[in-house]
Length: 224
Image 1 (cartoon, rainbow, N blue to C red):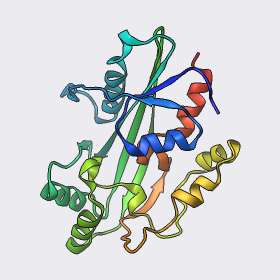
Image 2: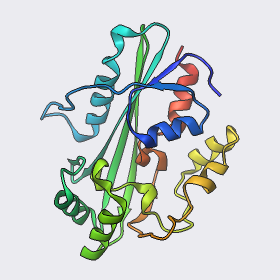
Image 3: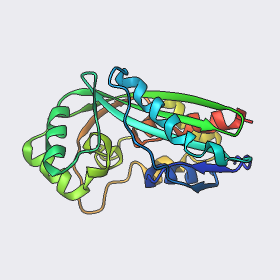
Image 4: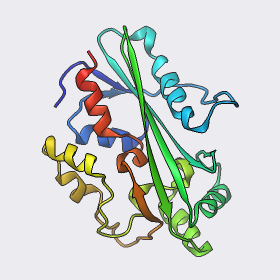
């Protein structure tokens, strides 16, 4: 467990909070109030890093010995960002666009203290199976993904008994004594309802969930 420095998680995401807790990190949650706009000319893959730093710097003037952990995730299809859907119809359109295709999920993290900062990002390729209109509407109506980029949460729609973690993630979890995190919280089927949307994941599963915890942990160990 990393005891010091004290951490501020700049996120209201229950998934990010959950992942931080599960790897033994203590933190205070503080939600940044920012305009999440970005330059129109910015490459899609650079946007999460830009926004993660923007979130972290909200708290810069208030810091003493704390370190802010801020993160942002984008879903990219054909070089275009799919944000959180604005309504059910928008979610239907997004999932229809992703059906049967591979897309990229990029999560960036910014660590910020009173004296320095570091930012890093991770890319994962996700392939959806071909989805019918009924599949899409069932998923939206049962799993309510309107608060998620790309209108889906990977933890909701994996094939049953599928281990989504990369070797790097598995090695990391074993190194901190948390291999059980995979079995207990990732591969278990949802009680009473399930639909498989994801076909394959190439890269970090936790990046798709919204926080590459193996990289956060590694970078915090050297961020002093």
